Image (tube, rainbow, N blue to C red; front, side, top):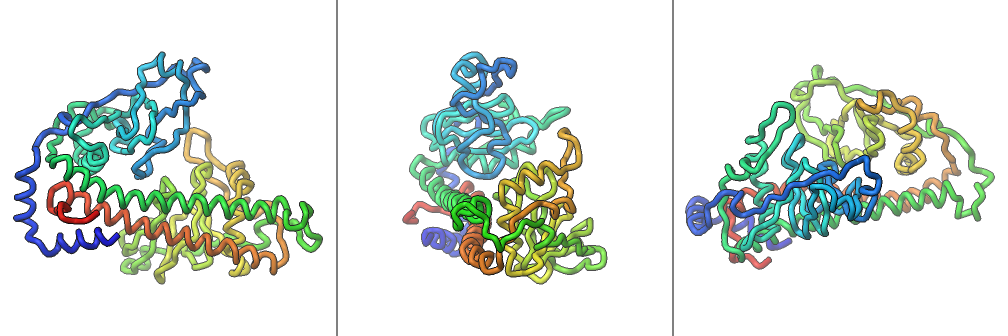
Length: 419
């Protein structure tokens, strides 16, 4: 992205104050409510089975609480009858969805028509406003929106909230240039995510082919392979790092994220950490034991001398370090996920946790060492690519978040940049 380097160079070499004042004087100052159409959502009656399970995607905040620009799928769908017999509306391509109650301020664009519930607003750009520019303008304004929430039980944003947000709007050509600059970054992030999803599917398919279906041996398990348990090739590590004893040590800290897109470690001094953590090694494989129905599995980067993680992880160490990615593939398999979810504590109405020690009793097929290494030689480069894409996405997201306020304030002028 050479245009991005040119833009950042211009930002550092021009007089920021003079440039911003000149540009902002040419932009239209208005309130956010004046440039959007707000659309309310609704929920078809859940008692009417004929309203549900159709081919119309029906959005709730859990479907787009992940920082991606577009939302492509929903947990629930409704029928045409459900749409016509409820207050839900159908959003158009490139409309925007924003969560307005409870977890407020989550945002996404719509790639094709979708309906949505009453805890969200649909947002449609008025004439003269580019939809993608509007998405980033609202993203830039989310902090202000959240500061204006109210409600005795749940945080809520209303139509009045949008009326109290002042914005400045450039002409349509500049809107499109700003939008393209930011969208190019998000498009690269989403492309990396698609590559990663494809690679993850490939690794799972290869594992199943080799060690479940035995396709390399005509569907029969080789006689020198054996049935064993996960505990025969891995152990659970519980070595503890104490922040109290190491207050000034910089650590590479992994905490439990809500979504796969947030697999990034935080670098900080242990003085800011309140509880004990587990130590990690370059051979560790981590999986969240919290609510295991949402699978969160990692190979930690270990790019510092002090990688640590939340004790809400289960940390596996291979008995043979060369077998790490074989163990990773086992833990990433559908069978292990089902096993993990079936051995939990806590009710369905509270936070469930998997029981670490029981996971070592998971039945596995252990092939000969030569086969394991042949398998790892195929999947390890795929896992490396996934890791590199995740790291790149982190840098891209950080760059986008730095550019966003500068572009929306006019501090960074992109009028002369070839995008």
